[in-house]
Amino acid sequence: MNLDPSRIAGREKLILTGVYLSKFGALGLKRLGFRTYAEAYNVVGYALGSRPASIKNYRDEFDPILQSSRKGWHKREIREYCKRVLDEYGGLDFETFAGLIKSFAGYNDNEWSAVQAGDEPEERASGFAKRLITGLAAERYFESIHSTLPEFRGLAIENTTQLGCGYDFKLIGEGDADYLAVEVKGIRETAGSVSLTPREFEVATELQGRFYLCVVKNFQKTPYHELFPNPLAGRLQFTRTERVLIQVSWLTRV
Image 1 (spheres, rainbow, N blue to C red):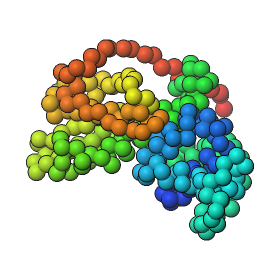
Image 2: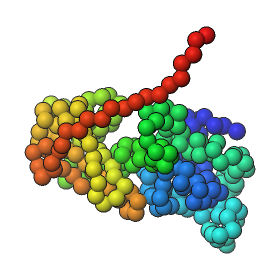
Image 3: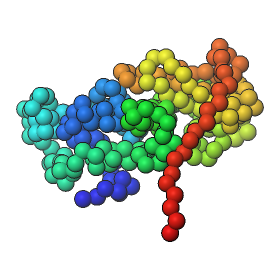
């Protein structure tokens, strides 16, 4: 059995998410921090670069085998490649399976819990869902729709999320000098709060009209987006806040 996420194919990750949601149901949703199946489909689906409906379809595929409360696709035989995945991974215990699903998005429970030590247990349990909604799922959503937006039509896109430059995407025309910068944020509901890091705020101040904030909303039901050009000079009102994070570790002498 392969538990290294880097060696598991993209389609298998979708299938495994379907197995997990079918096998563990509401308990599995809660362990990942999701409130509804629709939210799990949307967030994990976009985070894995696929359609949310794909994960629902795979869950339905396994329901006739793993669930008594949902019929799923009970009128047809399970597809052979799905059966192979179920045979290989279906015996995983709850915590191992949950950790595997989280690892698909690069989430590490140990690292994240260390900086959330002061939060309530329920808040720590929802860390996976929160991180995907505010980060990877929202970014993948934007990648999937950017070419349809009039502001960016015809521009090449460059993912800069790992470069520390203060925005997630660079939209480039014929000349690199006049690029547009897009910072993407995601929220669970139709309204909520988003924050800019000091670096993002600095770059937004510098680029002004060439800086866009894209907020992807309503991951709990049907995601949609709202675009804010030059967000510091528009209708949004930003308030400076400060927060001290306490990171816990355990030290010994050897």
